[in-house]
Amino acid sequence: MTFPLRIRPDDDTELRRNLYDGKVFLLPPTTSSLRLVDYARACLTAELGDTPRRAHEHYDDAELFERVGRVRRRVYTEPEGQRLFRDTVADVGFPAAETAFDPARVRAIIHGAADNPRAAPVYYPHRDTWYGHPGSVVTVWIALDDLTAEETFVFYPGRFDRPVANDSEIFDYDDWVSRGWSLKIGWQDRDASLRARYPQVTAEEEYGPEVGFSCRAGEVLLFSGSHFHRTLPQWSGLSRFSLDARVVHLGDHAAGLSAPDVDNRSRGSAVPDYIQPHDVDAMTDG
Image (cartoon, rainbow, N blue to C red; front, side, top):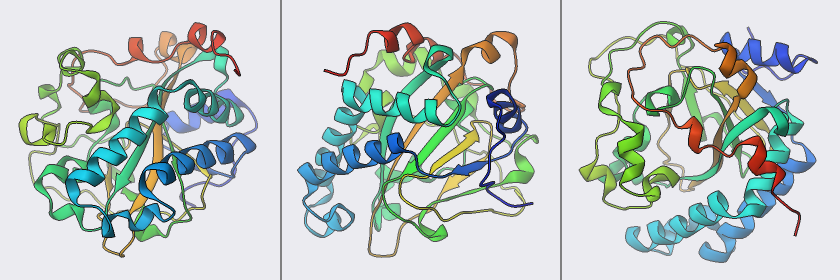
């Protein structure tokens, strides 16, 4: 089977059913996704200069973390980034009136950072559902640059509906966000990974074949949050920047339609803190 799929079903309901069944789609850029990429790139350039992928050559770890953190906060919290993401997911089958979403996060996979203990949780193989997201969650991932398969991440499709030994029971969403929204936005606290515990696998297992992908900037990757996957370290001399976010179709969620949730024991729910349709209605273009 082609992986990921490049053509989506015409019907949005059928698209979601395919996602809950484990299919992964890499869809062409839309006007909105390209605008979102341009916005995120402009935010990065303002902090990191004209060549963000080489920023690790110009800043030490602490300053780079602080600068990228400001970009994460801006893209995640400012209305412009939220509107552009809302429009992007509407273009690919998740209408604003039916969808709740967690805003887009800038992910920075820095060249050589896999050697830094602070970055260890970034590379844990995991399911997004282990972090208080429901089985109906769909992850949206967008690269800010053209990337080879060695620069993205890998799926383990054979484990989509088969359990993996893990300690997701340690994760309580309500407790996690009670310690500050910096954790929710994504590693704003440089030492958080040294103090906090993040879900991970607990036994050495054979996960089956790894399946990766290459992509173009602005293409929209859609996959179920139940997929078991792993971020790849970057050793090419370039850092990788991308956007990811989570969406839930509220009708499906209410009806109990979802992907298999075979080994998730995390507690609490992130969905009440997503941007809801009534919040979208309040957004303006000003």
